[in-house]
Every structure is written in C-alpha cells, then in structure tokens.
Length: 169
Image 1: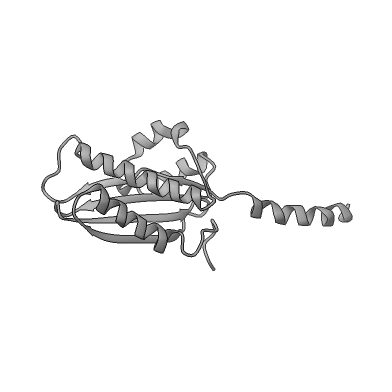
Image 2: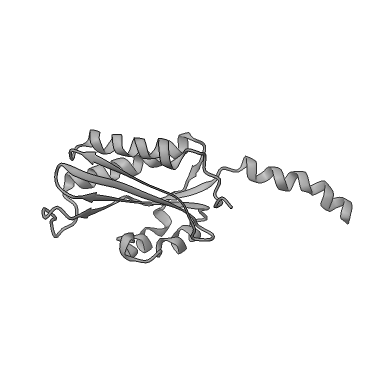
C-alpha cells in the first residue's frame, strides 16, 4: 500500500502544475462621485467602457495561460449581489460555486469627466485573503484612456509576478 502511495506522489504533484489556475473575473463597476451620476446606473458610454476593460482583463489572463471562468451559471446571484463594493465579500461564495481559485473584482471611480481612478482587487477564493490590489489614475473619459489604465494595471500589478492562486507566506 505504501508503495502505491509513493508511486502516486509524482502524479499528485505534477497535476496542479499542468492545470490552469481558474479565475473568476467579475464585471468592473462604476462609482460616480462626479455629481453627474444618473439614477439608471452608468451612462451607456461608461457601461461600454466597463465592459471593455472587464473583457480586456479576461482576455489578458487567458493569453497568460489562466482559465477564465464563465460567470453565466451564477448570473442571477451576481445581479442580486451587486454592487460588490457594498456587499462585504458576498462575491466569494459565488466564485467558490463556480470553482474559481482566484477572483478579480474592479471598480472605476469617476471623480469628474476628466479624472477617473481604476481599481482592482484579486483574492484567493478559498481563504478570502487579498493577494494583490492596484489602482491607476487616468485622465479623460474615453475608451483609449480606460484601456491604457487597465493595461498598466494588468502588466504591473495583476500579472507581475505571475499568479499562483495562493497567498505568499
């Protein structure tokens, strides 16, 4: 019996290295403190930009070898729980239900039509521990400025060094 366990050790240790880390990337949210906020949520152009940067994060994580999980099976729970900035980690059980090892949540704070701040937080789904966080100030409320801000965050905060799914000791 001990021989069988020893024979399985290389397979057990090799399996996680071959499996891609599963990441739940939730949609970025907007916190409009500019005084321009509309009661119906983000303006259409800003909702487009939120979708744009969320898609960019998902695409870059996939290109880097991570398995980005489809959130559709939990869409109703996500809709009910949002905005995540107000729910005290209520997205963690959703990420767990999806089988994620890591989750990414993001927020864009609109201070004015010229000054915006893109923030993200990456957490270990099992423990809830924050593994990384980042923030980038951008100027101008355009697709280009939002994409430049998220590009900086992905390159310099999210993927450097590469994600492991576990908090560093």
